[in-house]
Structure formats: structure tokens, C-alpha cells
Length: 300
Length: 241
Image (tube, rainbow over all chains, first blue to last red):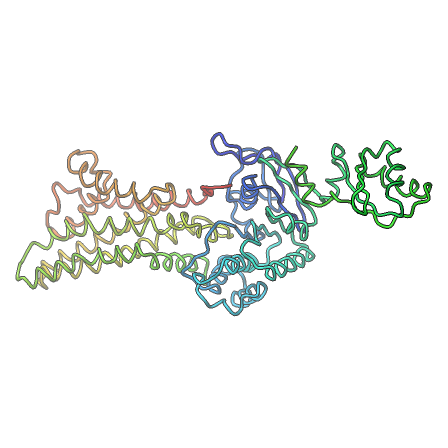
């Protein structure tokens, strides 16, 4: 999947602004607040929107205007309704037929089993819960075993057990060499599943890559740690003497440290403690979570 | 099943399941009910006039409008079309399959009522059979042109039902009777031209010739399929985040 300087606008409203990235095998999370442009990006990749500027390519082919790309793409859209007049099994079967799958009944059964909907497959979709609808959409997207999977808010409406199952499934598919891009506004989901993230904000790509690497590159933000040691007060005083450290706080039983540079702090902390005769029990980074990276990015 | 067959089945099931289709099927049967009532009352009205006024001018375009705009337009509105479009199927195949389903369903709802009403009103004499069959064929070809034209309208605009109703009621119902040139852009006038040629009756005032009528209906049918195919090829979601 490759986007090269892609923009998409509606009249005067710019939904996606000069976005470029390339994705291969693995799970990538598309992260951003509501209205940031996540669905527009997924629809551009799925060939359901034409870029106003730039190029979108899937497997080397233009994503828009070439239906043959859909033999390697599976899409789970968020808003689009599934046909209520079909049973779950019929819906998956029709998707298999439209994909010209060789063994339609076998592929249908396998896809339904993958999302664990065997017991409800012969019920009308009208009777499905939101989570079941998401799962039957996923079964339909998987029925031709696509190399690329695009999922728009796939965990919406799922209960915790279904989420876990879906995450395991997506991880397994990624390990088989598939490229999976899923959008979410729930940080925890992305943190648990994605190997890399694309952060979009106000239509722009704010950052991409492994979120801990992104955090390390944010040199204008202090890195925060908590330390437990044999003498927090003495360690705090010793650390403050180094220019890499510009703030310490004594909390209840811990020492909170703000450092300007992660690399330098990592190098100095142990020698300083040793020199002061202090034993380090625990050192924990407190702001290398996806949540803090995300909040830094969107507050910029 | 082929991809073409799968699209045909999906479209047919979607249309049959819609409440709007059931309502229009009841409307399409009204001429038959009228025929039965007239027959019971002992009246002998002119079958051609009734078929002209009730079917060709009224139920045929309305049925085709509801079915045609439902074939793709409704699937765009509720989002179910996306699942059919994100497949490696040429868009013209989807356009032809859906256009043919719309034409078929329109014919199923329009032609049998024509035959039943014609025979109920006109009896089983040879003239009556000729009139009935003439109207049945004109209803078939006119209904096909209407249905495929309205299918195309449903892809290019989200207000297909309103625009189609405006075309049927204002353009064909009022302007085509007042302004000479507008007759050539009227599916109804072309359908009446075919009916006139096949029945031998003068259906409507100053009907078009069979050659011109056939050309108009063919152009609307072929043009409708072409527009549908091109519009589906360029299809983009109407909304985004």
C-alpha cells in the first residue's frame, strides 16, 4: 500500500492533506481523533474515493478505477450496512461468489468459523448484534484470503472476549505475511495490537512508525520516569546536578524525574547512583505509552 | 454461480424485500381490479383508452421509477452497494445485471396486469387480443426503457425518486402534451407510438411513428446502461469523515 502526497478535499474542506506513507506486511494502527481523516484514508486505499491530488497504489496498481485490485484487498467498512435480507452465511457466500473463489461453500464455512459465527450463520443478519455484524463483515472480507486487509473501527460493538479473539486473529494473519491496516480512536486497542502506528490529525499525517521510536524523536518534550531507590532524596539531588535532568519531584515512595534527552539519561542514571552509593530498585518510563505520544502529537 | 448471477440474485432479493416494492406491486394491480369491477358492473369501456390512461401513462412509469431507482440508488443510500463494488468484477457487468433485474421486475409487475385488464375489458375477440398484446409489448419495451433510465438516474443523483417523479408528471404529463418538441424526449410518447403501431388503434393524440418510437426506446435503454456503467466506474462514497 502506498500513498504519495495524497490530498482529498470536499469543496473548501480538506479531509486529507498531503499524506505519504508506504505499508507492507504486519499490523498497522491508524490512529486519530474523530474527524481526523482516518475513514477518508481507508476509503482512498480501498478505491472508494479518488484522491484530489497525489497517487494511491495497491500492489503497484492504482487503487481507484481498477476493480482487479479487489482480488487482493479485503475491506471491513464501519458505516456501510450489511444486507438485512440475507442470512450471515448467504452474505459471506455472495462475497465468495463475487470474488470468484474456487470452492465457494468451503471458503464460506472457513471464513465463518474464523470469526466464530458458526452457530448464528443461518440466522437473518437483521437479528445480529452490532458485534456480530462486525464479525460477519470480517468473514466476508476474509473469504478470498486477501493479502491486504483494511478495517475501519473493527472492534466497535464487540465484547471483550470477541476483541481478544479478533486481535489474535489479526496478529496471526499478519504473521502469515498479510498487510493489515486498522483504524481506531481507542488507544489501548492500537497499543495492544499494532506493530506500527500512523497518527493522523486534522487531515495530516502527524507521525508514523513504532510509537516508542516516535516518542524518542520528540526531543522538545521532556521524558518522564519514576525511580525507586535506596535513597530517593539523595538520588534526586545527585541527578539534578547533571544538565540532562531538569526536574525532580519526591512523590510518596518514588522519585519522579524529567529529563531532556532519553539517551543521555539512560547513560548517566546508573553511574550517578553508583557514585552516590545508592541502590536502584526500579526505573519506569511513564510517558512512552501510546496515549502520551498521541496527546503530545495532537497538542502540537 | 457466476458473478453476473450473484449480482442478479442479490439485486432481485434486495428489491423484492423492500416495502416500497410491495406498495408499488399493489398499485400495479389496480387496473385489474378496475377491470373486474367494470366487468361485474356490465360496462364495456374502450380497453385501449383504459390501458393507455391507467397503465402506459400511470402505473408503468411509476412502477419503473420505484424499481429502477431501488436497483442501485437505494443500495447506495443504505451502503450495501459497497460490498458489491469492492470486488474484482467489471463495473459494466454490475450495471447490466442490475439494469436487467430492474427491467425484468418492472415487466413482471406491468405486463400481466395489462393482459388481464385488456381481456377483462375487451373480451376474447381477435380485436381485443390484438389490442391487449399490442399494449403488453409496448408496456414491456416502454417499461424496460423507463426502468433502465431510472436505474441510471439512481446512480447519478441521490434525488432520483423526486427527479423521476418530476419527469413523469411534469415533463411527460404536462409539457409533452403542450410543446411539440418535448415529445421526442418522452418515453411515454415512444411507448404510445409502439402501442399505436401494434394495436392499429390511435393511442394518444398524434402518436410518434414506430421507427422513431423504437429508436427513442432503444436509445434510452442503451444510454441508460452506458450511463450506469460509467457512473459505477467513477463511483465514490458520497460521505466521508
